[in-house]
Amino acid sequence: MRNSKQRSFLKWAGGKYALIESITKRLPAGPRLVEPFVGAASVFLNTDYTSYWLNDINPDLIDVYRRLQQQPEQLIEATRPLFTPEYNQSEVYYRLRTEFNQLEPSLRRASLFIYFNRHGYNGLCRYNRSGGFNVPFGRYKRPHFPEQEMRAFAAKAHRAILTCLPFEKVFEQVEQGDVVYCDPPYAPLSATASFTAYAGNGFSSNDQLKLAECANHCATQQSASVLISNHDLDSTRSWYQQATITQLNVRRTISRNGNNRGKVKELLALYRIKP
Image 1 (spheres, helix red, strand yellow):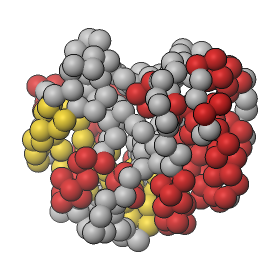
Image 2 (tube, rainbow, N blue to C red):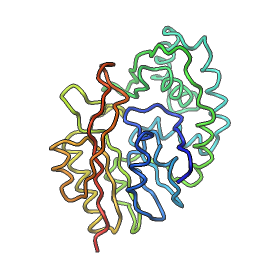
Image 3 (cartoon, rainbow, N blue to C red):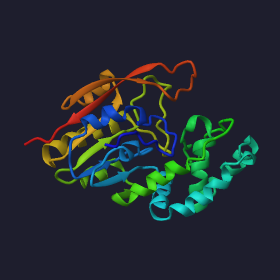
Image 4 (spheres, rainbow, N blue to C red):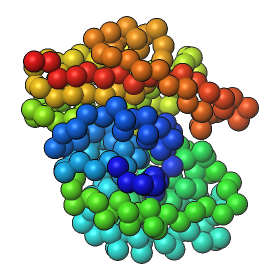
């Protein structure tokens, strides 16, 4: 663990930067950290495992990470011109959003993904049922161009394997001694509080239960440890009843209601390797 925390270059709903100390304190030692839901990669950036397997179901996110891993300067220089005042206007934002939704994976699409992350509303990453990115303009005075944060990711990315797979496929390939950290789309606090459509599909209670089953199987059959983050609810405590649970109080950082950013209860569920 490094002396100072490293921020991700991405703003992210539910990002784990504020919880790094609590998470890393509970992550077991091991040769490799596996993240089936890597998101903004704050845990990757703030741990020191020999190697990493970073996975996410969002192909745009993984494409950006791969480009930073393989050709960081190219992506940084393609993104830099988008962080000028002329691009911080709603009409330009929506024109670029239309362009983005018509593009195949490319350097241009990757640079626009970073642009939208910093210029879109609340840093959300959300897609409609047709797979179209649909986050509205954020109206920020001066969006930050995260060049140094991008370079920090690139400098460490040689340690990582990057994949875009369903989480179940990742668990199938977890190896003995691996440490798995899961930050799934959280169980909603209410019927209208879910931000799970970041990959164009939801994450149902059946998915949540399947994740808990995979974690328990990992600990009991695959000799790997698993740590999961989620809201602290009756439902999550039921799903994780085979794990050791730690409760956390976390300040909400992204909410539809700007006045509803107080502390919420979260938990960490640890499945330890069973002999």
